[in-house]
Structure formats: C-alpha cells, structure tokens
Length: 284
Image (tube, rainbow, N blue to C red; front, side, top):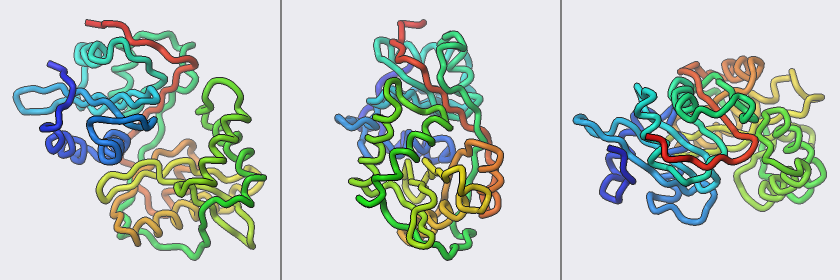
C-alpha cells in the first residue's frame, strides 16, 4: 500500500532517508526545512510511503514546484506505477533521484523521449569534511554591485545545464540574480576584488550539505576556480558544523576538479526535466 505520510511517520521517514543520505538530500532537506505539512514554499513537499513487512520500502515526494523526488531501493515497474498513481492529478515538471530508480519511474511514466528537456545521469560524489584541506580563498555573498554580471552568469549556467524554465531565459536569469543578491545562499569566489565563480548549498540535512549551482565563466575556466569555489564553500560549512558533503557533477572536467579536493564517487544521480509540465494520470 502507498499512502500519504502522517506526522507519526516523521521519525521513521527521517531514519529511512538518512540511511541513504547520498541520494536523499532533496527529500530529507525539504522535510527538515518545511515538514510533512508542507506550506507555500516552492520546495515544500508532499510525501507518500510504500510499506512492507520490514517497514518503509519506498518514499515518493512531490515538491510544490512539481519535482518528483524518489527513494525506492529495488523499485520495479509495478511499484513505480503505484507510486505514480498515488500522485494522480498532480502536475510534474521533473524527476530526480538515484539513476537506476529514476529510470524505472520514467519507464512507468511512458513519456516519449522528445518530452524531456533534460534527461541526464551524472556522477554522484561524497566528501567527509574532516578530510577537506581548506584553501586560502576569499568568498562573500552576492551584493548589489554584482547585479551587472550575475544575470549573465545565471543565463549561461541554465543554458549549459539545460535547466532553464520555459519562457524568457533572460527574465529567469534576472530573477535568479535578484534572489542571489537579496538572499544568503549564493557565495562568490573573489580574486583581486572581482567575482570569478559562484556556488551554493542547495540542500541541508542534519550534518550533511549538498553543493549546487557551481559556475565559472568560460573565459576563467581551467585554472582550478571551480574546485576552489567548492572547497571554500565547504570549509565555511564545516566551521558551522557540517560533516559530509554531497554533489553530482555535470561534466567530466567538473568530476576531476572535485576529485582533486577529495570527493569520491558513490554512484550515479539522475536529473530529468520536462519541456512542459505533465499531469499524472491514474496508473494502476
């Protein structure tokens, strides 16, 4: 049976996800940030549980912004169809999770290959922060003076990673830049007084953090700035109590850069984004 998670499930749900932390960061981070009851935030998530004789066997989440989040070791097509049926009537824009699990869910969804804007397996990496050698770098938050460069950086990042939302890319980039300047998530790497790279923590769960949104302008690449950006960011997080870092790398060159600062491969992670949102039907 698949059913909505209830408040009394919270401890078991956290334990199930924490035991699979590398591929559960969005599920667990959203749970810690917004709870089971969700709310209006884009990342607030509805959770469903599939249970067997041994307890929880699968968790499906659906964020308010339409991303299906999956943690279902050993999932088969029958279970995948039951998961999708639980969310029938909801609109989705993408799926994320362990690569082998997402593939099964995509097969059950049975959408044509042309429906997908992004459908990508990426190396999944982990670093125990006790092993991080803190670099001598200068980081700061995004500021008003960065308004001239950040929209272009975000536009290039979204185009490069195929994660741009439908519509006007320039406007989406402007919104992302505004959020970076007014918020506190995005950090910039500074050299000789100017910003040369950006990165952020896109999920937090207990003592674990997940790195995302790392970008170095093309003209400034191949000089170690991506790795320095991530190492500096994680050194700050370690000072605040983080013990483990997770990330998925968008390219072979990024994987090599992260390996140089100590990240180790732990599997494959899948990101799938639809060109247009899709309403789930009542699969059985």
